[in-house]
Image (cartoon, rainbow over all chains, first blue to last red; front, side, top):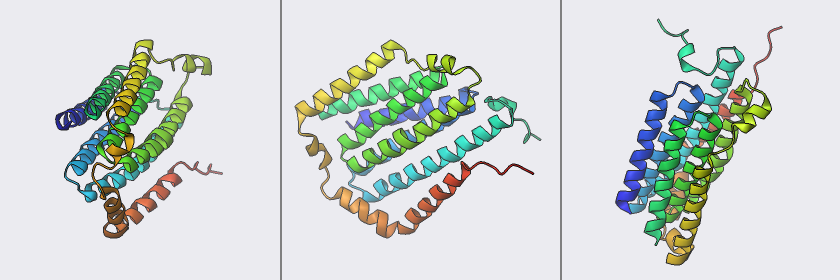
Length: 98
Length: 161
């Protein structure tokens, strides 16, 4: 079970990272970030249960809440960008480039 | 048996995550991510952290995915009919997800009563609650405040007069 869960967490994190790096749509990038957070949570939960560490479980609960807040802020930012008529493509946002 | 349920849940999660990466449709990507989150929640339960599995389902699969789908709906330039036609998940992928869930349920029920996995580490959930509301009480309060502030982010701006 140990190897299966670590492999799953690693693969999920790699796929989330690939989604953030390879996709151009902001919503797809946000989904990739959520996938990476889920992979990190999975690794933490597995480690916590394996070593009977309640502090790691508490950390996962805090991470879940922070990730939910991050998703809400990210989605509202995306909606704000859409309302300004600049589309969903991250490459179109050039205002902060020097 | 529980081991095989975890293996199947992990494999299904990885397959759906790969499908999310290669899917051109944002709807399909969101549905694939939802399946991944549900499968990881099942792994939490099987590993002995049922409370976190429940939180994962409530927070991610419930609130965050609903917000994501609403954002996708609000962002689409196409007509509603075109956007909902885009929603159809590939049949092979959907069949794979259903088969994985059926296999996980069968393996979990055949191996041991579901409660046996939940009490794999006796006292862990109680200690987790104690840590959350004693050692990490300040962090818990800070996160609560953060979620409240995040909720303010969805409020519409006041139109300039």
